[in-house]
Structure formats: structure tokens, C-alpha cells
Amino acid sequence: AAAPAPAAARAHSTRKVWATGLVAALLLAGFVSYYASANPDGLEKVAADKGIDEKVEEHGAADSPLADYGVKSITDPRISGGLAGVIGVGVTVVVGSGVFWAVHRRRTRQEPATTSHGSV
Image 1 (cartoon, rainbow, N blue to C red):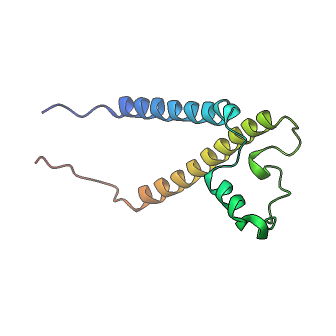
Image 2 (image 1 turned 90 degrees about the horizontal axis):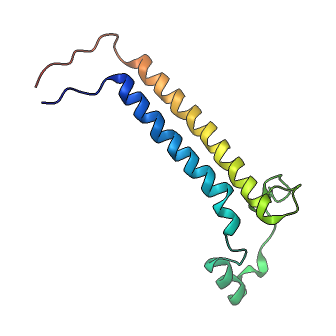
């Protein structure tokens, strides 16, 4: 049987995967979104065609700085959308990392101080 990978190698591999995912998300949010269509998606189109959208009201966050997938103070819609995407990725990474850290910390506190690994 092969020996398990050292903890340092696993940590390095995990960091590499995490960094690659982060770079991919930032590229998609910041640059690929530049080429996204400004036309309504299928659901919005059907709602407009059938008159369903006539009763639509503004939501409570309509005046927020990142409303409608853009940054309020930037007039170029493509740059505004890309920047909003990058900000969204950043916020998601910070919140997700915080939740992961809190759960991981809580689990490590609950584990017994010594663990035995018996051979199978």
C-alpha cells in the first residue's frame, strides 16, 4: 500500500487548487462578464411578452451601490458589471472563508486530544 502524502504536500496542493479556482472566478467575473449580453434572459423575455412584468415593483435594494449587477458610480456598463462581479467574488470568498474557518475551528475543538489510527 502507498504511504499517505505528507501534510505539507496536501496543504500545498489544496492551496494551489484554491488559488486556481479564485483566479478562474475573478477572470470570469471581471473579464468574461464584459462580453455578456445586455439583452434580457429567457424568463425576462417571456415575462415581457406575456405582460407578466407589468406588476413589477422596485425592490428594497434598488438604490444600493451594486444594484442590477453594476457599480452605481461607474457609467460604462461593461466596466461597472465586471467590477461588480469582482467585488461579488471577493465578498463571497471572505464570507465563505470565514464560515469555513469557524466550522473548522469548532470541529477541531470538539475532537479528542489524541486520536488513534489502527491498521486495517
